[in-house]
Amino acid sequence: MLADDEFKYADLKNFALMEADKLLSMEGFKLVKSQLSFKKTIQSGRIEVAFDFLNYYPTNYEYSFGVIIWINALQEITLKFYEFAGIKESIKWSTGFFEGDFIDSLRNSEYKFRTGYYNEVRSLAEARNSMNATLDTLKNKAIPLAYLLCELKGFQEYYSSNKHEIVKNFGNNALFISILLAMCLRNETEFFNMANYLRAELDREKAKGNIYEELYFYLDRMSEFVKSKS
Image (tube, rainbow, N blue to C red; front, side):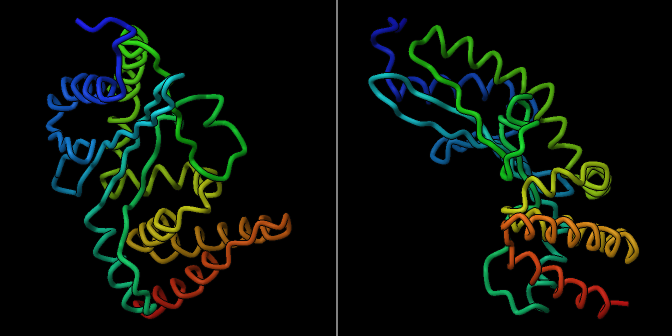
């Protein structure tokens, strides 16, 4: 067994992945160690739980996880929208969140971006305690939310009821596009209700000096895209 003073950066990565694998393998996730992530394909899409590690030797090491979700129906309509709008960049995830989204002091802040939360670790004992909390968050909060959001209906209902999450993440273009297209797949009225709400929020941000010109572009082109389908 390692003594605390023998605990190295590689030990933290190996330990965290090993402990996470005990939980996630029971949920059907497969570890891709080279990518420090766990992946699961389901009928509606794919879920990835990815770990991030930081090396602040000799003071401490840190880690955190993020969850990325792909929804097949949204990937398909996003491709059609990109072709319509002449967007050449690759299609990204439908939505995602970090461990920090489940930390009240971070989740309820006024930050515009989802905040990663890094767990400080200086010894094997600290790694055990920290991972116990992380695994509890994964099991009881993150994974259930991922299963909900990976279903198109769950995605639509969640963001319809949590519009503030969209505003807090105006820097996340992939999420912005996915939300609007998810409303489009529900019905045209839902799309324009969401589009009008987001435009008003963008205008408020612009008045504060926070300008998201690319999001205005997506709104305009997506409105044309939806009208072309009517």
